[in-house]
Amino acid sequence: MSFEQRRQSKGISLTISAVLEALFFIGIIAFLYWFFLSRILEIHTATLTADNERRAINFANVLLSYEEIAYINNGKIERGLLDASKLESFASKKGTTSDLTNEGFMSSAWRNYKQISLGYPSSFALVEVTDLENCGERGCVVWVTVLVGPTSNLDLTLKLLACLAVGFPRNVHGCIIATMGETYTYYLSTGSPVATVGLPTLIRYDDGTIHIGRMTVIVLEWR
Image (cartoon, rainbow, N blue to C red):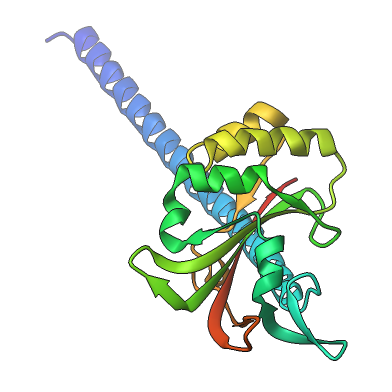
């Protein structure tokens, strides 16, 4: 091999080596960018979830002494003691815990929503009150209420509720995108204590009997 050929071969080897080194460093930079970006997004999501969870807990605690469902004794609200007769008229839908996975049952609850002055702006609350001592083959008795809090755009709220009535729970995200557009994001509290375990409560019936119950609150909020 001549000197010129050896020089060209060495030059090609150096070029290939430089390209490989450049690709390696580009890969390292891309990985670090993805890693830090994913961590930042996780932290941001965790912060929003925690904020949403705090709001759900606060809202649930307020409902435990809300006069529309709480038992009133001699003009005094008994916090944590719910009136069964008030739940009958206040709830969007009454059934059993097995109905919570029934699309028709839940769609009916969304259609029969309640507007109240409590709650946070631009939000919904799905409230379930379960009587843990009144259970049968189809589960325990449950009152389901969809509460609509104060909002700055009632038209969008009604459109979203109408969509949820036919698409819940299969297409929550699709309903929000269809009615509010891509500029809105939403956060649904799941896997959290108030959304799974619920808050303890008591339920008083007209005959004076008191049952142990549980109130579960899930907040749907857009920003």
